[in-house]
Amino acid sequence: MTRFPSSVAIAVLSTMLAGLLPPATARGQAPPTPPAAPAPSPSPRSDADGDGVGASRPVDGYTVGAAALNVFWVPFKVAECGVMSGFALLGFVFTLGAGRDWSASALEEGCVHKWLIQGDDLRPPPPLAPAPGERPPRP
Image 1: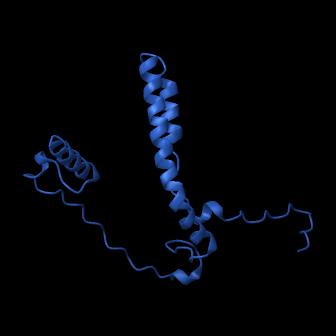
Image 2: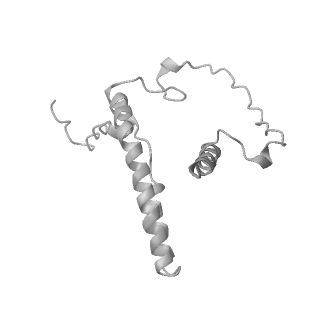
Image 3: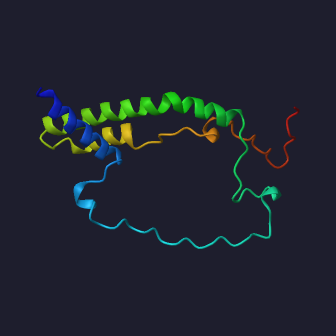
């Protein structure tokens, strides 16, 4: 029967960490109101002009592939961040704080870099323009 109080405590703490249950100190406070955003003024140009401002790319194979890769990439990044955080903590503790630069770089390597893959990450770069005086290559 001693498992029941510990499992309840773990469930409450995990929901608080997930943000589903606010902490006890925040219950009596009013929620912060977001600042009012100015209304966007209508643009004389439409999105069909192709200027790229405010227009998103259409869904293509690269975007779908990036979404499929994120199914595996995000859990991998979570695991990598956890492992690197553990190494950083161990390195910091065992060196008594002298290895804080290494610990910071290990933590940054595992947790700070890009977490989501986008279609632009997979899309090949556009071909380079030929130099002046050079003939463009034949297709």
